[in-house]
Image (cartoon, rainbow, N blue to C red; front, side, top):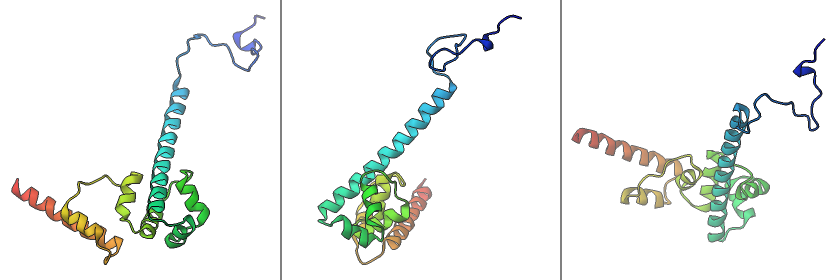
Length: 156
């Protein structure tokens, strides 16, 4: 009986010898690299939004505990968001924005949920108005943008 390649003992370290011993990455390594890059991008986004929230909180001279109370989230959870360990949902971002007296849109853009839109006097006035809720601001902005699109289409 002849010895087959599969019958040979594995070298120290548990690696099986390969027919082509070039050091190119295979499909498994490529998939893992892509997955790692995606996780890194999510972590970077989480740290970016967390750092931004922290900077806004400090600028507003609000303690972590005060903001957590205003936003209706736990103190440890908000701390994890600020340190980039957690990525908040859109609802949590809206609550944090309300606690910081910011437009939720600012946090949505920063978190990558919305694309940044060009500023304009109407948008700026709506976003600065404290007499209406965040939801009302968003609805008015959507209506305004739909009118603008409609008029642009009519001109063409």
